[in-house]
Image 1 (spheres, chains in turn blue, red):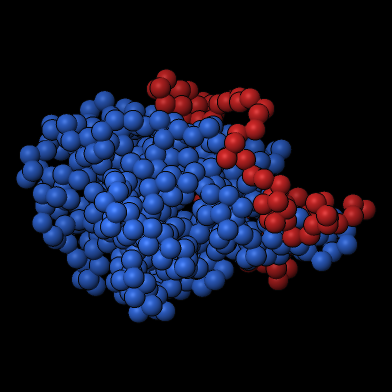
Image 2 (cartoon, one colour; image 1 turned 90 degrees about the vertical axis):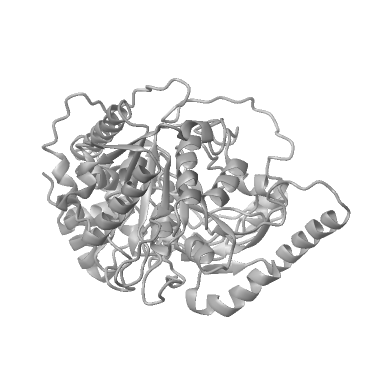
Length: 453
Length: 102
């Protein structure tokens, strides 16, 4: 654990993965685990594991800023369910990691407290929105980390930083104590250096929770080794067409992963997910509608901020000046698509398209057990390259949004033995049926342990 | 389809209780661009779809449904009053101070 703080001190000045640290608490917790080891007491599997937590999850008594000025002075008053579960395991919390403000972005440049840099090359973004968590793991500043994935916010930075990230089935992990962005999409997911690390963390945080009515029990073996044998892998042709804007090196890398699976004895076949190209558009109607409702609670009355105005309407407006540009855009968009007169043409239509995308997956899973696809259309881009063009950033989610719309589990991991000309790894994702988290992690782990880098 | 003009933008910002910076110029450009992008959904053939999610897998609800619980104190999982007060910026002897409604 001391070793991780040594790395943090050496590297975080440049990477800026963390927004706050809890060294004192970490030392105390690690001391307790050491004492238990010395006394030969039985230890839970994650005892003493040093982990980083995205700063949109609550740890009682610690800040939870969601990288927004809005929550700059807020101190969490309770533990998120995932945190409570990790405390029972005697895990060690190193600190809270940077993100795009309220998890809205794909580069971590939308943080109100400055961007995180990609540990593989500091001129480039780490991806996002869980960019701090991914960078912390990639830089050796944490062993594993928690992120949250709405439309790719765990998978995308994992791919950009060359590590493993898992988006569980929607509802498989309780959202109690996660600062909400878009509630029908948000899922907490683990990031780590190996599939096995991610499996261990997911195993602890999963499960139904009375404090989150949308949570479900995704039970079964983790990873599900028995399910791996004879799995059929689908390759969706739409993810490789020029329409999705996919870069040549990404196609090359993911095709390499396909061949590696074939060499391991898996059958691959081409499949079609015809509505893929509409996923981002549907998402950017439904998500802002949910986000604008969720962000309505930041009214300047609660959460540590208080506007100076003497009158209520002015107080709301003044407090909400603390929102950065991206939350403002999404709030206005959400207010637009939920307005009478626009609701049917935009919101209702997008929900119908969401259903079509789910139908596509249901259809595909009749023929295959898991779907192999790119995570991102390209390799990491430079800081500042896209930050003023919202639509260009939205298009970063083109391959991660479909699984989010359908609520599917999806695992992002680096293609073994591949580097781009600039030296970046490329990620691929494995998407499975709802609730089939064990088999997605099973085949991912099989790849991770049987293919050499 | 919709044309988002300055007047509509100001109305939406007003409903959202947020101000528009620099006269809302950048916000207007961004919103127009995004709205025109999402309008590609309009001609999609909606055969076989509906606005409400059909639950295909009974064992795994895909969207929230009503879940009731007893109105009872859950020991250890409820926030106590003192902790709740600490999270509020302006309190007075156990009361919460808020601005006047005018």
